[in-house]
Length: 449
Image 1: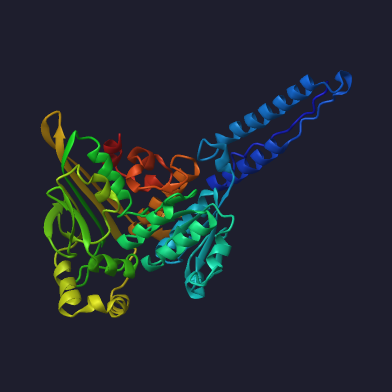
Image 2: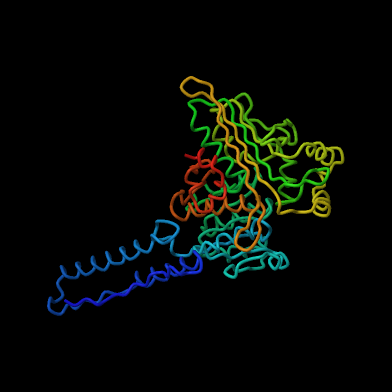
């Protein structure tokens, strides 16, 4: 019997970047796993026993080759070295950041879709990201783009969420979104019933990461009294009467200021009005206000119904913001003319990259008969991602959905049906390469342990 010599390439440790090394590793796996083992069978004839021996040897060689190379990649799963094709819908601030992060990882081939050629041209993207101008409202067009892809990520305005989800359902592609819109999420949940692909809505900051944190804290108690969730994306240097700058979707901000909010009060799941129940608190010596806004609870209200006395979500702003917004929306009636309010905001409020995201969750309950409280507090600031400075809200929102996609791809999350954010373990999220964006401070790591 004669065996040929198989040469396996190994990635150069002089690779200029992690992405380059990962690409070299991927090529090595491809060559090693497809190499042929040449065995002369003439002296032994064509016995079934020998053929089985050859087959087992070849299979074990392929597995060993793949397993060795997998240790180089970001995940321990050999399948992760095969690039997955992803479609991101929406080329705005968040969508372009998602595309950049996924492409830079070296494990995803990304197509960024938007109906605006100008928006696509303005997006600062790495060379590996493909772009496609497309009106997703056109019948059948989005389905053509999604055919054969691994997943579609919606970074589009909330009113397009259901259209993208329906296209994912029609093509059997995994679906993830960032929406805070309650009605859209209910439709996504309907589509997920009996589906063979995964539907994972609300994968951003709030809803999203905030629910993962709140559920983790809640799990540490025998019985719950209250879960209070507060999140804000604020300018570091406010300079106008609203004490606010545009950092993400204008449509999203207006929607959460106008739609009814879910809450659990005295154990009952009810709706409460937006911009009401204002409170003040201090964190690191800075005073903030917080008030009801829609959608931030995600599905957590459903999950904790009957298990907690009080559950609420409120948006954090600098003092004075809520009073002006109530005057605009209620006194001037702009809640019924959202297009006018959007035009005012985008014409008068500058955007900024110098922002801070605040995540503040307080849970109280009983453990071993004692009434206790645990708090999670974290601030994330804008920082450089690749060659660009990205705002804190871009980083946290994009990192959230990228981390969930990673966990779906490596088998950590169910690959079919409806997946809630609170189904995701906090320690697993923070350990993910994208989720680490939230774990920049010692306190966060300590709370996740």
